[in-house]
Length: 76
Image (cartoon, rainbow, N blue to C red; front, side):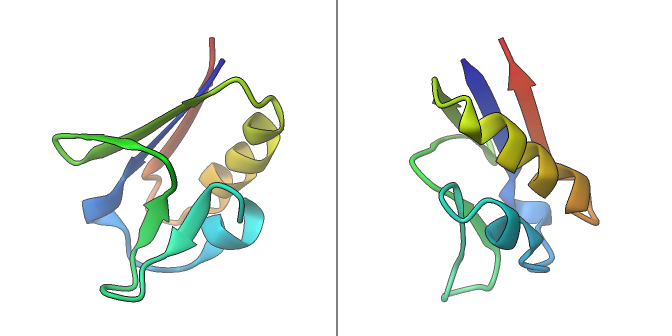
Protein backbone atom coordinates (compact mmCIF):
# COMPACT_ATOMS: atom_id res chain seq x y z
CA UNK A 1 0.00 0.00 0.00
CA UNK A 2 1.32 3.44 -0.97
CA UNK A 3 0.28 6.47 1.11
CA UNK A 4 0.66 9.92 -0.46
CA UNK A 5 0.04 13.07 1.56
CA UNK A 6 -0.16 16.68 0.35
CA UNK A 7 -0.18 19.81 2.51
CA UNK A 8 -2.19 21.83 0.00
CA UNK A 9 -2.28 25.14 1.90
CA UNK A 10 1.51 25.48 1.60
CA UNK A 11 1.53 24.85 -2.16
CA UNK A 12 3.17 27.58 -4.27
CA UNK A 13 1.82 26.28 -7.59
CA UNK A 14 5.11 25.28 -9.24
CA UNK A 15 3.39 22.43 -11.19
CA UNK A 16 6.21 19.88 -10.75
CA UNK A 17 3.94 17.32 -9.09
CA UNK A 18 1.46 17.45 -11.96
CA UNK A 19 4.30 17.05 -14.47
CA UNK A 20 5.92 14.06 -12.73
CA UNK A 21 2.73 12.28 -11.60
CA UNK A 22 -0.20 13.46 -13.76
CA UNK A 23 -2.33 10.46 -12.78
CA UNK A 24 -2.24 11.62 -9.15
CA UNK A 25 -1.88 15.42 -9.20
CA UNK A 26 -3.64 18.27 -11.01
CA UNK A 27 -3.33 22.02 -10.73
CA UNK A 28 -6.48 23.81 -9.60
CA UNK A 29 -7.90 26.36 -12.03
CA UNK A 30 -9.44 28.23 -9.09
CA UNK A 31 -6.33 29.00 -7.04
CA UNK A 32 -3.39 27.55 -8.99
CA UNK A 33 -2.46 25.10 -6.23
CA UNK A 34 -1.88 21.38 -6.51
CA UNK A 35 -4.72 18.91 -6.01
CA UNK A 36 -4.03 15.31 -5.02
CA UNK A 37 -6.77 13.33 -6.74
CA UNK A 38 -9.15 10.94 -4.93
CA UNK A 39 -8.11 12.08 -1.45
CA UNK A 40 -9.45 12.43 2.04
CA UNK A 41 -8.89 15.84 3.70
CA UNK A 42 -7.99 15.87 7.37
CA UNK A 43 -7.03 19.27 8.79
CA UNK A 44 -5.29 20.45 5.61
CA UNK A 45 -3.52 17.15 4.92
CA UNK A 46 -4.87 15.46 1.79
CA UNK A 47 -4.15 11.73 1.84
CA UNK A 48 -4.46 9.04 -0.80
CA UNK A 49 -4.01 5.34 -0.02
CA UNK A 50 -3.52 3.18 -3.09
CA UNK A 51 -2.32 -0.36 -3.83
CA UNK A 52 -0.90 0.97 -7.13
CA UNK A 53 2.87 0.37 -6.90
CA UNK A 54 3.39 2.69 -9.88
CA UNK A 55 2.31 5.54 -7.59
CA UNK A 56 5.39 5.03 -5.44
CA UNK A 57 7.96 5.89 -8.11
CA UNK A 58 5.95 8.68 -9.74
CA UNK A 59 4.96 10.40 -6.52
CA UNK A 60 8.46 10.08 -5.04
CA UNK A 61 9.77 12.00 -8.07
CA UNK A 62 7.10 14.64 -7.51
CA UNK A 63 7.97 14.84 -3.79
CA UNK A 64 11.68 15.28 -4.51
CA UNK A 65 10.98 17.99 -7.10
CA UNK A 66 8.65 19.95 -4.80
CA UNK A 67 10.52 23.12 -3.72
CA UNK A 68 8.45 23.53 -0.53
CA UNK A 69 8.52 19.83 0.53
CA UNK A 70 4.79 19.43 1.05
CA UNK A 71 4.42 15.95 -0.47
CA UNK A 72 5.21 12.78 1.46
CA UNK A 73 5.19 9.25 0.09
CA UNK A 74 5.29 6.10 2.20
CA UNK A 75 5.20 2.42 1.38
CA UNK A 76 3.55 0.24 4.01
